[in-house]
Image (cartoon, rainbow, N blue to C red):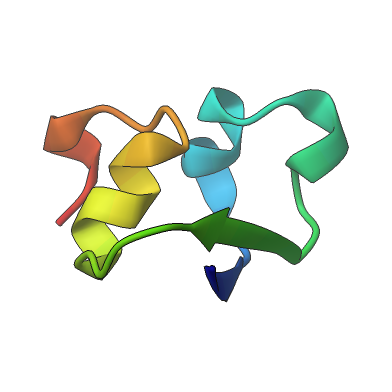
Length: 50
């Protein structure tokens, strides 16, 4: 299992559950992925991830 620490800023927080907004949190995943792919798994729409 792999993990990464995320901290989203400004309006990207709107896509996260309340408990993950404005705080760093650990996100675990099973296969190698790009950062963009991982952010999309959090529920952030494709167009918002640049």
